[in-house]
Image (tube, rainbow, N blue to C red; front, side, top):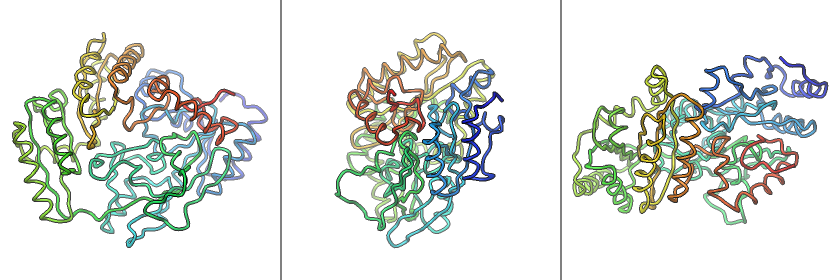
Length: 468
């Protein structure tokens, strides 16, 4: 380990005085905390590349310790970054020579309110553990991201997450009722004394934490909506003549207000990999608390899809997806690595009028890049106004090829009026394209960052960083 300055040694002693044994500066552990699941950093690590090694890791067990740690970081001008499940895919958690504040020791379920239908938790609780607890009581959050086995509630808030059931239940922003925050300067914003369904009492400053990726402080508690577990569930799958025809059917489904819990449309390339079907394929899950309502939605759905020329192929395709849905990335890695290939994913969103063009242009432009092997796509997360398309690119395991893919992909999305990210966030990966999408917004975000973080130490180097 490189020699540390006297100032840093003093800082680390003070950190230990706050968290005691819940601290480490072991180089082996620090290497683990040097990255998240960003495929580029994973590739670099596999090849012995240099990573952004942090200074130390602390595991606070309550909000008071978080306040103390952040105040210490401000006193010593040492950067810090919050760390949850480490399941992000954009490098947002990577921070050299910083104090990593791992929130996973703050994992209590504080209150389950069954009359008012909400749950309050500490932000370090794993979403899987929370969902299992709620299921045992007859409830659910139905927020099931791809990172479900690893993700924690605080990380889902910080990255503006969404989940597989979002078409019915919404993203994390729709489920969140309140949060407790420790700001980047060590300030404290508590939960409301009483939870309310909605309030019109001025701008809600807490909502700035949504998607802030640890740049404004740390979320320490959250209150989330809960739902009764649906009593009636219907599953089915259909094949279509084209991906575009399936999108048109999905639009009609949404405009009729049918709102399936899950709707996923796979193009031929991804359907072949996932289901061994060389056809554009859609899976549906409808969930309701009323049998009559479920049956009515089923009937209406079949009518819409039949009109669009689809063929019903049965619920076994949905069962296959449910069984394998969290194994997708590991399965892709097993396929591509022996061939000297690598991969990444890009999730975008666009309105109905341009969605088909975004799909066609993206696949055409990226597939033309030298070194690209294949581009797969599926649509998920549907709205009355449009949907998310999720692309998986397979290419030569080469960093230059990697960045050529991203340059072309981002340029194609921006030119066609799609967003550069639907739910993965910005991190280090998309930082250079952030201003192209949001323009003048970035200037004001940097001013907000400076107000919250006057020493520029809260997960520095990311998209909100202001110039000292």
